[in-house]
Image (cartoon, rainbow, N blue to C red; front, side):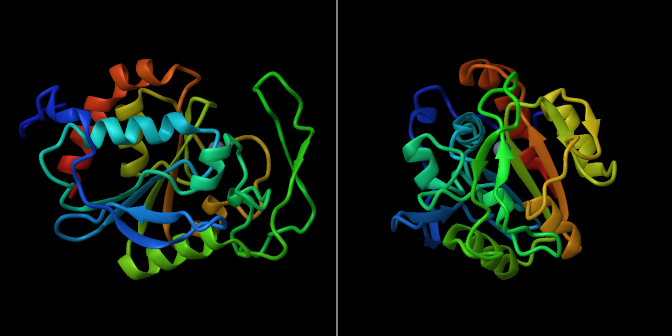
Length: 235
Ligand SMILES: [Zn+2]
């Protein structure tokens, strides 16, 4: 991939240099913030809707910190679930798996089953919320997408090591290349109330990137520059 823009020096990469804009508050009152696109948002990339997938925040931050300015056409959310991140949990402060809380036609009130590590059975129960779209983090993300008017979203997760979307679109191929991951349609089990399902019902294109099971620093070494390149050059 070509790199036709200047990267920040190592020293400049130490801080997050761009101003974040508030788009809501978490259950605990933590501000939800996003990085606006410099010109016009055509794509939204969000990380850490699952609070225990902090490597997604780290990698997105490392990529953005390589740039001299915010991407022209990509808005970014570093942490969609700050309460979960602060607690080190998948769920938010209400114990809700936000990626099962979106108002979809198949949202279910029954608890969702998740696995704590890849080798574990899916036997750990989490709430999907008191109703579809009950959580402030879910509501704020939906409102932000509507406000920005974006039609395409990349959702960063870990650690399945794949790119998942309904169709093998140009954006899906770009994610395959940035992260050197295979594409597939679906993660192998139903995900009612997920953002991906919500997006499909709203005619938004959603590409879910499941980072591989790697230490954050390895992910940054392998993918931060390519991700920076993608963000900067996205049109
Ligand atoms: Zn996840």
